[in-house]
Image 1: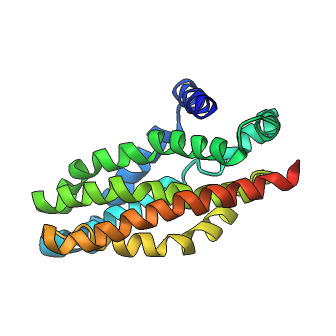
Image 2: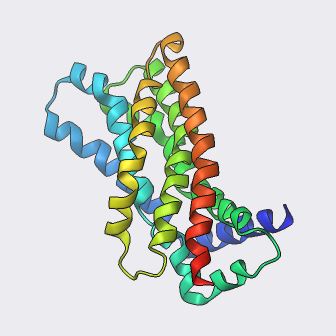
Length: 218
């Protein structure tokens, strides 16, 4: 636990000093949410109906921004070798990096979702459920993305390969995430519970898979 918290604090400190990934993801999120209504036209009923889907697609694409650097920066400066030979299990250290990355990128997206929902003419109930669904589901996107980031850690330009690897894995999260954004709480509850299960499963499977992908370089 000490190593876990220390690595989370270290990654958060680096993110605050370097900057870029969290703010860039939020700006990208805003751009996607803003541009899609221009393409669909001024039909407010249509926008409010597909608003949750737009928010989830924007969140998915924003999560991918900077995800290729999750392990690549540590690989380049040698920090990843120190993590591999650390006394703490590699899975715990991978989970720490995933948590830090989500706090910088995923959490701001979930908190900003109600504000961006205004651009999509969403009802207050839909904005509230969408924000809750993003808060629960975006960790799953980060955990699944960590697998692709680990596989492409040694590639200089692995961003496109990472997207090809990760996007098919996120389809169930998108399906239940949009369903959990239903304005009716009773209708959204089963999808929200399924989304919680997907997040927990992705946290376990993604952590172990990413750690296994990083081990062959030892």
